Length: 181
Image 1: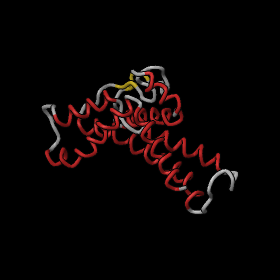
Image 2: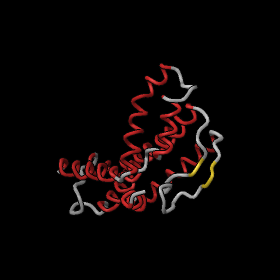
Image 3: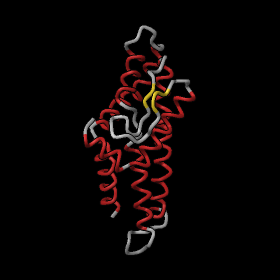
Image 4: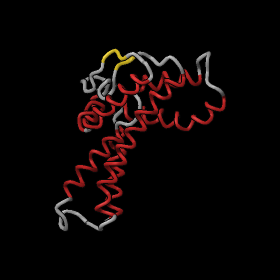
Protein backbone atom coordinates (compact mmCIF):
# COMPACT_ATOMS: atom_id res chain seq x y z
CA UNK A 1 0.00 0.00 0.00
CA UNK A 2 1.32 3.41 -0.90
CA UNK A 3 0.76 6.55 1.13
CA UNK A 4 -0.69 8.19 -1.99
CA UNK A 5 -3.37 5.48 -2.12
CA UNK A 6 -4.34 6.12 1.49
CA UNK A 7 -4.39 9.90 0.97
CA UNK A 8 -6.63 9.41 -2.06
CA UNK A 9 -9.04 7.34 -0.01
CA UNK A 10 -9.05 9.87 2.83
CA UNK A 11 -9.68 12.80 0.48
CA UNK A 12 -12.56 10.96 -1.16
CA UNK A 13 -13.88 9.22 1.95
CA UNK A 14 -17.63 9.43 1.14
CA UNK A 15 -17.02 7.62 -2.13
CA UNK A 16 -14.59 5.16 -0.53
CA UNK A 17 -17.21 4.34 2.10
CA UNK A 18 -19.88 3.75 -0.54
CA UNK A 19 -17.48 1.62 -2.58
CA UNK A 20 -17.01 -0.63 0.44
CA UNK A 21 -20.77 -0.72 0.94
CA UNK A 22 -21.41 -1.72 -2.69
CA UNK A 23 -18.76 -4.45 -2.48
CA UNK A 24 -20.26 -5.75 0.76
CA UNK A 25 -23.75 -5.75 -0.74
CA UNK A 26 -22.53 -7.54 -3.87
CA UNK A 27 -20.77 -10.18 -1.77
CA UNK A 28 -24.01 -10.75 0.15
CA UNK A 29 -26.03 -11.05 -3.06
CA UNK A 30 -23.52 -13.48 -4.62
CA UNK A 31 -23.07 -15.53 -1.40
CA UNK A 32 -19.36 -14.71 -1.16
CA UNK A 33 -18.24 -14.82 2.48
CA UNK A 34 -17.05 -11.50 3.87
CA UNK A 35 -14.07 -11.93 6.18
CA UNK A 36 -13.93 -8.36 7.47
CA UNK A 37 -16.41 -5.64 6.64
CA UNK A 38 -14.80 -2.42 7.86
CA UNK A 39 -14.98 0.02 4.97
CA UNK A 40 -12.50 2.69 6.08
CA UNK A 41 -9.21 1.25 7.30
CA UNK A 42 -5.64 2.45 7.16
CA UNK A 43 -4.41 -0.33 4.86
CA UNK A 44 -4.90 -1.43 1.26
CA UNK A 45 -8.48 -2.49 2.06
CA UNK A 46 -9.55 1.11 2.64
CA UNK A 47 -12.76 1.50 0.65
CA UNK A 48 -13.03 -2.26 0.13
CA UNK A 49 -14.16 -5.29 2.12
CA UNK A 50 -12.02 -8.32 2.79
CA UNK A 51 -13.80 -11.33 1.30
CA UNK A 52 -13.17 -14.85 0.09
CA UNK A 53 -12.26 -15.29 -3.58
CA UNK A 54 -15.17 -15.66 -5.98
CA UNK A 55 -15.94 -19.29 -6.82
CA UNK A 56 -16.69 -18.78 -10.52
CA UNK A 57 -15.84 -16.44 -13.37
CA UNK A 58 -19.37 -15.05 -13.39
CA UNK A 59 -19.25 -14.18 -9.70
CA UNK A 60 -15.77 -12.69 -10.09
CA UNK A 61 -17.00 -10.51 -12.94
CA UNK A 62 -20.13 -9.40 -11.06
CA UNK A 63 -18.03 -8.62 -7.97
CA UNK A 64 -16.00 -6.20 -10.09
CA UNK A 65 -18.83 -4.94 -12.31
CA UNK A 66 -21.73 -4.23 -9.93
CA UNK A 67 -19.84 -1.93 -7.51
CA UNK A 68 -18.18 -0.25 -10.51
CA UNK A 69 -21.58 0.38 -12.08
CA UNK A 70 -23.05 1.68 -8.81
CA UNK A 71 -20.11 4.07 -8.32
CA UNK A 72 -20.39 5.33 -11.92
CA UNK A 73 -24.12 5.95 -11.49
CA UNK A 74 -23.55 7.83 -8.22
CA UNK A 75 -20.85 9.89 -9.96
CA UNK A 76 -23.27 10.65 -12.76
CA UNK A 77 -25.86 11.91 -10.28
CA UNK A 78 -23.43 14.20 -8.44
CA UNK A 79 -21.64 15.44 -11.55
CA UNK A 80 -24.95 16.18 -13.27
CA UNK A 81 -26.15 18.07 -10.20
CA UNK A 82 -22.97 20.15 -10.26
CA UNK A 83 -22.99 20.75 -14.03
CA UNK A 84 -26.67 21.63 -14.56
CA UNK A 85 -26.46 25.12 -13.04
CA UNK A 86 -23.31 25.81 -15.01
CA UNK A 87 -24.37 24.61 -18.44
CA UNK A 88 -28.16 24.74 -18.41
CA UNK A 89 -28.71 28.03 -16.62
CA UNK A 90 -25.50 29.73 -17.69
CA UNK A 91 -24.19 30.45 -14.20
CA UNK A 92 -20.52 31.39 -14.43
CA UNK A 93 -18.93 31.18 -11.02
CA UNK A 94 -18.85 32.79 -7.61
CA UNK A 95 -19.23 36.33 -8.87
CA UNK A 96 -22.69 35.62 -10.32
CA UNK A 97 -24.17 33.05 -7.95
CA UNK A 98 -24.05 31.97 -4.35
CA UNK A 99 -24.44 28.34 -5.43
CA UNK A 100 -20.87 28.17 -6.71
CA UNK A 101 -19.61 26.46 -3.54
CA UNK A 102 -22.45 23.95 -3.61
CA UNK A 103 -21.52 23.15 -7.21
CA UNK A 104 -17.88 22.67 -6.20
CA UNK A 105 -18.81 20.33 -3.34
CA UNK A 106 -21.06 18.28 -5.62
CA UNK A 107 -18.28 18.19 -8.22
CA UNK A 108 -15.76 17.01 -5.60
CA UNK A 109 -18.08 14.24 -4.39
CA UNK A 110 -18.84 13.15 -7.96
CA UNK A 111 -15.15 13.02 -8.85
CA UNK A 112 -14.56 11.05 -5.65
CA UNK A 113 -17.01 8.43 -6.86
CA UNK A 114 -15.11 8.21 -10.15
CA UNK A 115 -11.80 7.85 -8.29
CA UNK A 116 -13.11 4.91 -6.25
CA UNK A 117 -14.96 2.98 -8.94
CA UNK A 118 -12.51 0.22 -9.79
CA UNK A 119 -11.88 -3.10 -8.04
CA UNK A 120 -8.98 -3.87 -5.76
CA UNK A 121 -6.00 -5.31 -7.61
CA UNK A 122 -6.37 -8.64 -5.81
CA UNK A 123 -10.01 -8.82 -6.90
CA UNK A 124 -9.00 -8.08 -10.45
CA UNK A 125 -6.32 -10.79 -10.33
CA UNK A 126 -9.00 -13.32 -9.33
CA UNK A 127 -11.19 -12.04 -12.18
CA UNK A 128 -8.36 -12.31 -14.72
CA UNK A 129 -7.37 -15.78 -13.55
CA UNK A 130 -10.94 -17.08 -13.66
CA UNK A 131 -11.52 -15.62 -17.14
CA UNK A 132 -8.28 -16.43 -18.90
CA UNK A 133 -6.15 -18.89 -16.92
CA UNK A 134 -8.46 -21.24 -14.99
CA UNK A 135 -9.38 -24.76 -16.08
CA UNK A 136 -13.11 -23.89 -16.17
CA UNK A 137 -13.04 -20.76 -18.33
CA UNK A 138 -16.16 -19.03 -19.65
CA UNK A 139 -17.01 -19.46 -23.32
CA UNK A 140 -14.84 -17.78 -25.92
CA UNK A 141 -17.73 -15.47 -26.83
CA UNK A 142 -18.06 -14.24 -23.22
CA UNK A 143 -14.31 -13.72 -22.95
CA UNK A 144 -14.20 -11.73 -26.19
CA UNK A 145 -17.26 -9.62 -25.37
CA UNK A 146 -16.08 -8.80 -21.86
CA UNK A 147 -12.41 -8.24 -22.78
CA UNK A 148 -12.77 -4.43 -23.16
CA UNK A 149 -14.47 -4.15 -19.77
CA UNK A 150 -11.86 -6.42 -18.19
CA UNK A 151 -9.10 -4.27 -19.71
CA UNK A 152 -10.82 -1.20 -18.24
CA UNK A 153 -10.88 -2.91 -14.85
CA UNK A 154 -7.17 -3.75 -15.19
CA UNK A 155 -6.21 -0.17 -15.99
CA UNK A 156 -8.53 1.28 -13.34
CA UNK A 157 -7.32 -1.10 -10.63
CA UNK A 158 -3.72 -0.17 -11.42
CA UNK A 159 -4.44 3.58 -11.50
CA UNK A 160 -6.41 3.43 -8.27
CA UNK A 161 -3.75 1.36 -6.51
CA UNK A 162 -1.06 3.93 -7.22
CA UNK A 163 -3.29 6.95 -6.56
CA UNK A 164 -3.14 8.18 -10.13
CA UNK A 165 -6.91 8.12 -10.63
CA UNK A 166 -7.42 11.19 -8.45
CA UNK A 167 -4.89 13.12 -10.53
CA UNK A 168 -6.56 12.10 -13.78
CA UNK A 169 -10.16 12.89 -12.76
CA UNK A 170 -9.38 16.17 -11.00
CA UNK A 171 -7.07 17.16 -13.85
CA UNK A 172 -9.89 16.49 -16.30
CA UNK A 173 -12.22 18.65 -14.19
CA UNK A 174 -9.73 21.53 -14.18
CA UNK A 175 -9.26 21.17 -17.94
CA UNK A 176 -13.03 21.29 -18.49
CA UNK A 177 -13.25 24.36 -16.26
CA UNK A 178 -10.55 26.10 -18.30
CA UNK A 179 -12.24 25.15 -21.59
CA UNK A 180 -15.67 26.28 -20.32
CA UNK A 181 -14.35 29.72 -19.38
